[in-house]
Length: 219
Image 1: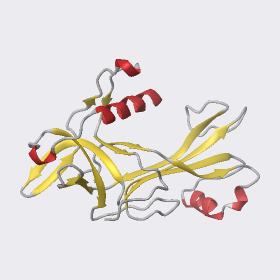
Image 2: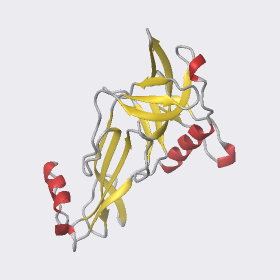
Image 3: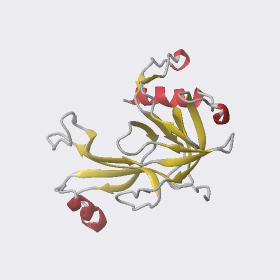
Image 4: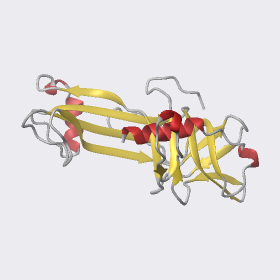
């Protein structure tokens, strides 16, 4: 997974921003710009960060010798993902180069490959698990037990005003400019200088470098 993510990140950063104004229907493009929410903004499930277009919450557990496994592939003395929530909605991106505003179709079951960093928001040990009632409530709402597990909750999100890069296919419908997921997987190509083999990415690529605590551009 790690090398695959590195390959996609390198592909995104190397791929030049497209000239959106002259892009034709069906052309694969990369657009970088500022996010504006669509008709259905999202909210992160734990921190309740409002007006997001992408949210991700992941619960990890540490397994020691003889401990409980978070999932079927969880190995001893490592962190394993026990629960994950990821949601994405349609949004607008204002292209830095052309000034055009495009509707990015990522909601309603569209395939999306998110490249958004998560940040640890809660670290739970046996000693401090009772000190976070919000976390215990979050677990209870999802019918997840706390027991004596060592847990870590991570969240990632793209909120309105963030700067993103999206890679997808141009669609023009009447006066609406849209970017939609490609119909076929996209190859990252060989990247010999980074010792990365090619891999195929399914769906629209959404990349956000913004730190979760960084300032966003007012929109």
